[in-house]
Length: 333
Image (cartoon, helix red, strand yellow):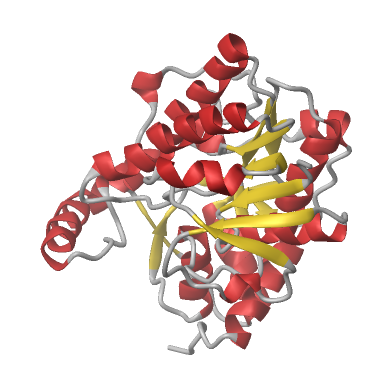
């Protein structure tokens, strides 16, 4: 009998939060994990683990066996990669083939975790929605492009193959269990550790990771197949967000605001050094280009149709800082 709920990416930040909400709802969990992955975020979860990888489609059939629902949360999430083809293969082709495998397995409903990175932005900086126009040629960065193309593949399969998928578009999750950490989590650690002397201001939408997880499950319970739902929280200018981190962490936030153009040469050198050392650069030309646009979003559709109710962003930052401190990530400069 098909009674499992499969979660991909459950060792990660968002995936582990989704698995926890599903467990609270009484779902019988199966978690697809990569070989050698850190299992720290699986503590407290009662689940069957199956080995699988987005770059190894031959693992999908076993993972999906006896599954009624699929939450596809796994993704290669980096703001810079030395070889873009690697990210495209995992996020786009891996997603497409997983969706096809889910069809073959007779999965009843799929929740695909996309991203606001796959959505359009308004020209005047007002909050964007699920229907804000987007042109692929305007998408900046390999990660954003991979998420845009993956979402398009899912929508195409909904239209052409009746894929029973609902799409959720989380904004910028913040909170506990950010073990990697995510780029935003690293920003929180750096500001709270007094390691950020200056910044380039931009706009972003901050949401508690547990609210994003709740939104995923609400999409399963109340979402409409083929529809997209933004799972966001509050819109912040980066300077104000850093001030919030500073207040909660009891440190002085960075006050020096730089222009994007001033950091362009630094980004070029940073990328060059990163390629040689095999590490991720702290600043790239793509992130500088992205910072020119305010990533402001509205979650009104999810609130009205799903009953989504995100808590204040402050609570997300409080929980994130507490977790980072508990795990020794925040250090005084």
